[in-house]
Structures are given as structure tokens and as C-alpha cells.
Length: 576
Image (cartoon, rainbow, N blue to C red):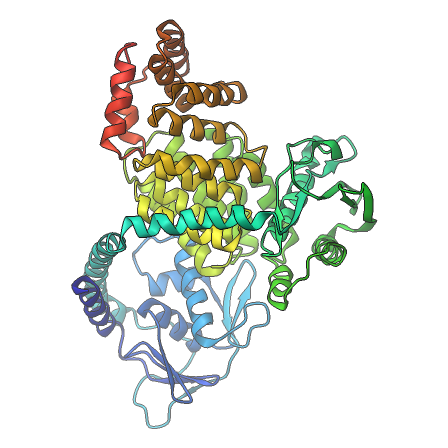
């Protein structure tokens, strides 16, 4: 509580040193008071951040005109290098405070590739002393006079907020938080039998153009993600092959499809089958201009939900109607970035980041693209084996937070936050973010799997095993990672037999993953097969000639001292 009070006081102090010589303005239905950073309307008062107020004041001074992002950066953050998301977050917060809709704005309009424009009427409050509302930039002298105080207070606020977050994270009792996740798992298992179960097979890309495969994969993944958000359905992943016989066990309804793109046209075929009766419930083909992709996707989802037996609530229908971006170009760049990111190699990771950023240039409020950029920084942290809470993770966290502010109801964003927290060894915060992801999508296999991984990192592998079984049931094609996580948990539970079964499966699926080889070597030592363990050490050296276990552990998010020592003791027997 003391930390929270200190933060409040520091924020107040910082606010008080913000530019106070601007006049109060009437902006649309709101009265904006820059001296207190408050917006008022009909007895309602909303306090906003000083930077957000500065952005609003500059837009108001240029009301009706486009203010470039460069001009906003130069005025609001003079002499400071900040990322684009700093401005985007300010605009998001302003829109929330003003009750503005970015898709049909009444206050702040986004002008693609240029900046922002305030479209609400602006008037100076009568009798209020201050500067005239015009199109001039704020006084540079005034900005210079306030800059030192602002920088000092920003540093104080940042420090105090950091202390408050760290303190607050440990106020909530660990067992209580663990019980919530465990209850989620239990509830998922109990309810699954009564839910309508669906599998979406990977859509087939027709035409033989491998470059277009990303579009087919993206469309089927988005369909699966949309259906997963419905509490009436349990969406179970397929085993990967686009044929009915490969459906996951337990899924009654099967969705399959094909995609072909060419000459400005898009052709999508889709089928819905009841696997109990082998009866086709719905089938259709769509041939539209490529620009109609989003409307086709919306129509497919609507037709599917009408054909499935689950009854949707109004709230569920509203969730399905939401579109993360209306820019087809941005969506295309995002899907291309996703395809490259999944390779998980340095060059592809950088190329994915460039594509995500290109998507954000086209749609600065594309939350999924922000989360994508965040994940590229987190992945770079892993690929380059950066140490501790590196600048790469700090950047990843900032971007994931920007995504959360744009769309807090998107499960993937909370998963990204959980992943970043886990890599930074903030395991309690990771579990909180992942719990939110599961609350939003009870079929989110990767959220169950990462939750399990975090439990193992923090020394609770027994909790990991049932969660990973749930993840594998929901997504049978989870890849090598699910087997690695399960093998790792069994190793620390002293079950070397089960550890070896799963780690060998992980190695067969991804023979160049260093972490898998490390744990496989340890499990072989635990099982008494020293010769095979020594062979695994050779594989580790082949993958990383300068490998050092101590150096690797310094970059690895395992925080349980008992398990770190167990791993060191096992691998020391074979020279690692």
C-alpha cells in the first residue's frame, strides 16, 4: 500500500510539472484542463496521463488539420527517442477517455501513413486566461523550461511503479494463484464432454503456389481462433493433414476447406461434417474479389455457427463480429510475418519483424501485429541467448502492453505477455497473464502448455503434467515443444522412463533443438545409460561448439535452485 501511495504521489507531482500555461478548452462535449490533466463532461471527470493531454492539446491547436506523427514526437517528446507505440498508446488512451470509436471517430481521426486529425469542434473556455487556439506549435522555450522537471519526474515515477509492480506481484499468495489455474484445468476436463467439439483442419492451398500457402494457413487459423472464443464450443486441433481421417479424437464436427488466389480473385471452398453420422451438414464455395476476403470470412463464420448445434449468446455473436484490422494489405503482411516467425531462426525472425512493422504502418492499431513484433524481440532474446531481463525483453514487454491496450480481449496478446514474463523470470506475472488467456479461450492449447512450462521453471513440475495432457488433447499437433515440456517435467519428477519417452519424441520432431538435447542427455544419465548420454553431449557440441552449461543456465528461465542443481549434477557426470 505504501508503494502504491508513493506511485500516486509521484504521478501527481509529475502531472503538476507538466505544461500548465495552456488554456482550458472545450473539445466536443468535453472540457479539457491541461493544468490538472482532466477531461470533464456533465459532472463526469476523467484523469489522463500528462503525455496524452499534451497530444490532445497539440491536436486541438491544429483542429481540423492533419498533425503528422513526426510533429507530435517533436513536440511531446522533444529530444527523446521513443518508439511509434508510445504515440499510439497515447491516442488509444485518449479515445478511451473521450469515448471515441476509432472505426467511426467523432474526435480523433487516423490519417493513414500521415498522422492524426482532431475533428471535434474546439473552443476556448470563456473567461479562461491563456493562449489563443490556433495552428501554431507550442512554444519551444516553454517546452525547454519544463523538460528537465519532466524527465526527472518520469524517472521517479518509473522507479516507483517498478517497485510497486514487484511488490504487488508477491502480495497475492502463490498457492491461491496456482489453485485458480488448477481449477481451470479441472473445469475444462469436466465440461468437455457436454460441449460441442469441433476440429478445423488446415485449409489446402490450391494451384501449386507454395508462396500462397501462408494465406490458406492463415484463414484456417483465424477461423479456429474465432470459434475458440465461443464458450459453447470446444475447438480441438487437428493432427495436421487436411483429410477427414486425421481429425483429432473426440471432435464430433469437422471443418475442412481449400483456398486459391489468383488474378485478383479469391476462391474458398468449405465443408462441415458430422463425424458421428458422416453426414455433410454444410458445404459452399465462394468466389469473390480478393478485396472481399474479410466479408467472406465473416460470412463463413456466420454460416458455420448457424449450422452447428451450439446456441450462441448475443455477447458471443458480438465477439465473432469483431475484426482485428480492416486493412487487407496489413492482414497479408501479418500472415507473411507469421509464416516466417514460426521458423524460429535469426534471419527469418528479423524478416518477420519487418513484415509486422509494415502491417502497423498500414494500420497503427492492429493489435495482433503489435503482439507479433513483441514476440520477435522475445524470440531474439532466446536465439541470441541474452542474459536475464535484457533490453530485448523490455522492448517485447512494451510492445505486448501496447497490443493489450488496443485489444485486451485478444487471448494471443495475454499469451505473448505471459511468454515475455516467463523469459524474464517473472513467473507469477506470467501465470496471471496466461490465466487471462485461458479465461478468454478455454480451448487455447498453447496457453495450457506455457502455463505448464512456467510451473516447471518455478519448481512445480507435478502441476505441469496434467496441464500438458490437456494441451495435447486440445492440439495433437503441438509439435516437439509439448513433448519437450512434458519430458522436462517428468525428469524433475524423477520419472526417467516417461522423461525419455517424451524427450526422444521431441528430438525426433526437432533434432536441432539444443534444449531438447540437454534434457535428453540428463534423462539418459538418470536412467543409467551413460553411453547414450555421452552421444547426446556430442550432439550438443555439434549444435553449439562453445556450449557451457553454466552460461546456458544464466540465460535460461529455470529459477528453482533445487532443479538447477539436479540438472548440473546429472550433466556433470558426462562432462557438461
